[in-house]
Image (cartoon, rainbow, N blue to C red; front, side, top):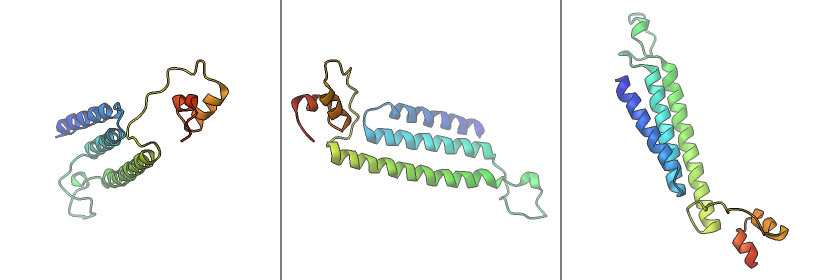
Length: 137
């Protein structure tokens, strides 16, 4: 069973890293979610499966009871990963409203030949090409 969880965690992490390398913000959010789920699988594997729930009962030996701490950590991790995913989706919507696109622009090669005004325009949110043309956002 732990081999299946280890393989699942590896494949989920690999898919998450692959999605993180894309320029689409939505795929980046999916990649972060996949990595969060892979972390949850690792926590499940660390908690070990036991046949009895973690309820204190004197008739059940302690060796047969599941450890409640990994389960509590798992619930906390699920809530945190959902909050991070929603925050990233809100950032995507804000970026879509501001720039009109949902993908990452490549960084400019260099600022060679750019004046101080062009660089200041670029740092204020304008692209370098827009600053050179005098276009304001």
